[in-house]
Length: 388
Image 1 (cartoon, rainbow, N blue to C red):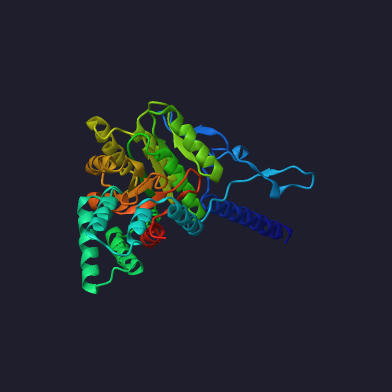
Image 2 (image 1 turned 120 degrees about the horizontal axis):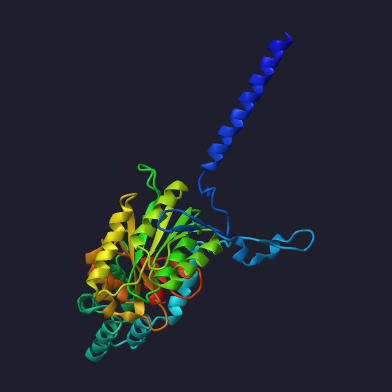
């Protein structure tokens, strides 16, 4: 009997140990798990071409004094980015203070009696706001017809006409949602490419977008595929460290497509929701560079579909930005636009113009230099801010 009891006891022990191992493996594959070979604050070789994955280093983050221990020391914490709802309220207020299109139009409408000279000034204001000739003509025709039919040029009434017509041009019915949901059918992350010319703020936008996604409880990996600018990978890594997002990077001058490929590979291995690929700034007039952008997309799609290609445009460049946008749209299928610097000297009409030119919606806008000064574009909130 003693032998039987011993065998039973050993069997129970083996069963319990096996169960614990299975539980540990399942937890290790859980959502958001980091590759075990990468310790925080270190880089680890991830491929034969020198590509590395940089895990977040919480030591680089400002200490959170609210997490002070009994002995008075502090524990470093990852930043918690601001949620989208709070950003929209703040950015709307900032746009209302700085916009020139709405201020100019309202000043003209407040005169009451809309003479031909006033109509000419309204048209000039719309044209100089980067609205474009076609949309300006449409808006002018609509306004004049409404005023004539209703027989009412009261400023408050005309303002309502203007709001309705502007909203129609901005088009609130466009789908502005970001395709950042994990591809459950293929069991791979959503992949977002960020493209644009030099100096538009692609790397900064990629970092800010990572913050926005983290605020929505998404697990994110970033790929530093801008391998031509020495500071780009370091800049992206800093953005990642602040919110706990790993960054895949390669040696300076390495193949951007390879880095993008490895970033998606890391995203799949880490069971992540979204992989953000920051590409190098390129001149829209250089055919070779534009062809390379297409190559990056094709290589990524060997691992996972590219769900979103966001074109970053500097709103202050006006009509010149539209020329750039058209060339990029020919190189890769643009799915949405990010308008940066839509404050200060920027002109709100560019929103309408770029959507007309590309046939894709403005999905995100930036109205400042702060880390959370990037928010989803809301057509009604935008028009109301212009006319507030």
